[in-house]
Amino acid sequence: MNKDLNNMTYREATQELEEILRAIENDAVDVDELTQKVQRSSQLIKLCKEKLRKAEKAIDQVFSEENCEVPAKPQEGSAGTLF
Image 1 (cartoon, rainbow, N blue to C red):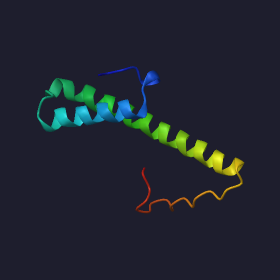
Image 2 (cartoon, rainbow, N blue to C red; image 1 turned 135 degrees about the horizontal axis):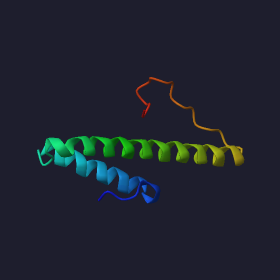
Image 3 (cartoon, rainbow, N blue to C red; image 1 turned 120 degrees about the vertical axis):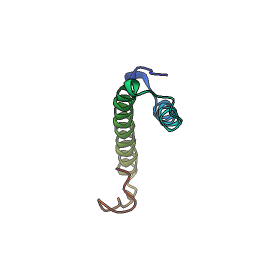
């Protein structure tokens, strides 16, 4: 796939990550290509984290604007933490 990160959706990024993982698990990636795949995976993971944080901020903003209670965030390092 290797789509430009600036125009990539969260779903596209996770799908590409899954493709990379399958290729590595199936030994479809040679050693020369492995470094590129690992670097691309790192970029995709960073993109996904950014999109999740942006969505969380937007959701928090909606709750704040509507005078609703913002759901309690899990303590850092707890089992509910995504990253």
